[in-house]
Length: 458
Image 1 (tube, helix red, strand yellow):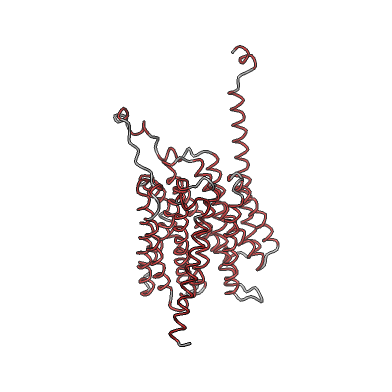
Image 2: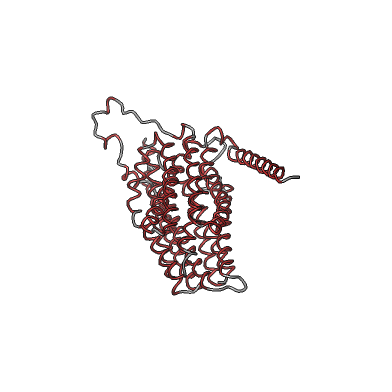
């Protein structure tokens, strides 16, 4: 067989395999009515988002972590974390309310998050080629913010495309699972591309992926959008505050269930941020024979990826459970495993804790999303998710900064003991608060209940 015939045969095989994979993927994403409701298209957009975000993360890791010595990498990572943390106090009051006001143009908003990230990735690619940190860091921050904005939009519109056969927790799990799968595929491909041709080309590939996401976002069904509400004629003269409560006033009244879930997830996010950066620098500096530092870092990444997948799969399996109980149970499980890791510290204990951190963050986030989607009205749902994402980003960065500092002064046993203590205090605080709320509600019910004499008289 000649070279041309071989190339033709290879091309035909690749095309056939790609078509088969596309059919299998489409059947999986559109199962149980998800194709008719629009959930399948949203899952596909989430998968594209996961692949693009992973390529950006690979490019950043190659630029500010592996490309420098340990001390330089630590300072660069700290600077990047501070840059991403500083403006997040303003993101919640800007992005969330803005997305709430764009309920009738959500497809445009979703496509815009993809398109803008594609342009920023193209700019970052040029900045990497020329060593332009002034352009690189703000562009990296912009991609992070837009990624969070996509997550807010996706969570806010999920109930609108939910088929009757699927619960919210299951739908959230499918969305997360799709992003994790494409991210797991994109990570080694991006790493190999970075080694062969450089991180700038990884960012250029991410540009193309985000542009594809913009097309998929515009093809979402019209039901993801909410028509503008027409104010009745007899209410036109009323001031706005009488027609609708203030957005931030509504957010402050989300209720104890949502508040409790947010606080538990904040603890899990800080735990995840701490472990990722602490263990990354610890494994890079300390040798765990017979494994080299690079192999240990690869095992750490694999443990975190598998933990996220298992947490997402378990979230779908536990669909009949109360999501607020899942959050508290996950926090307790993470506390126990971290304490055991401190006692038995070594490479495998560190990998086990990294697995649990990713598992807990994934399962806790699925449960929190379900709680917000169930408890919060659509008119402020995007704002609530924006507050949640901002809070979790802030605590993740604070946890990461703590991990950077702890990697200098503390060994694994001390660090994990401190973290286990923090998780335990968070759990005790939440349980105590929940008990006080239950007692208060029970007392209020007793006070409202009529006495026997009053009931007889009535």
